[in-house]
Image (cartoon, rainbow, N blue to C red; front, top):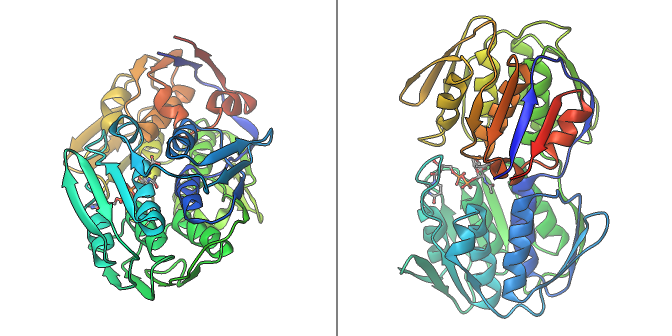
Length: 419
Ligand code: EPU
């Protein structure tokens, strides 16, 4: 299995181009199944999860063509298999987002239950409950969710908790339902909004976008469109932390500052000078060591769980003690044991990590366990003395496009070792 080798200790400096958002492009690809005509997507990141989703849609019969600019044209018209196998869903939970489109447009779906994963149990009960409320008949047999419906009917769906892919599945199902659906306690994440904007471009009638109450007036059909996926706020945040942890200066270009407010405010608390432009964020530590910050994760617009591991790494070398509280997933501290191997001082108490900053960490061999945990290990490696080797790097390829090239462009000494 490939690994990444980092020689740490160099402040990063320079510009980095931010890719399209993984968690927006995956549901948007699934949404293409709802259309009667081809949809062309731009700003698609070159990620393993994107390839997996394309493979899934291809297995269903959809025709996908990628051009040299990574624009993907999806023609959903030949879709004839409404099946998402376990082999694929177990590698990428986000595949669950085909459930809503399949049952709404084709009247049937068989999608594997995702099962547990490294960061928690992650049930999909809200997806099932919401689709049943819209009139789908659903059974769970042999590890598969089997759904059937003639035409879904608009209804009031109240989510028990703000769930990102749950909201996306219900919203995608509701766009072709008969009548109006109101989704209460909807997730407000920018990726949910991006999906809603894309659906509206395809002819859907969704309002309340960016609030906890989405109103979807069902339409008879969706047409084709061209749509550029929003930039990735978590990739942006990860590169900004790379600047902060190394005492450097990083400018993230082609991003969306307005969706990173909670992250930017924590970076300022850590001592960073942050300035923003329409699509650019510049972070400058002016050579200083970061100050420890307290972080508590919650749904958007609060601090994102997908940035928790990166801030844990930041606190490891900061001045003072920072308390990290994880409120979204019950087991998202797999990076902590690996950070210990670099010499970090972290005490875990339930869903809280108390991180006492140390002046220096030293390189070691580490094991990546999930996507964001892997990113935090790479960040820690950038500042640890000597060489850090992060094994099982395939986790990072699921969600970061060319991470070693982008960090290398900022002056990091980083290389990939093939298997
Ligand atoms: N939950 C339930 N029942 C459900 C759905 C969710 O109990 O039916 C719980 C979850 O167990 C969790 C909470 O609700 O405790 C929120 O989970 P959510 O459903 O919002 O997560 P998700 O949709 O599975 C997406 C992102 C994750 C990100 C979370 C939270 C995608 C493809 N994935 O997951 O991204 O952490 O929202 O913001 O959009 C990542 O990119 O590394 C990643 C894990």
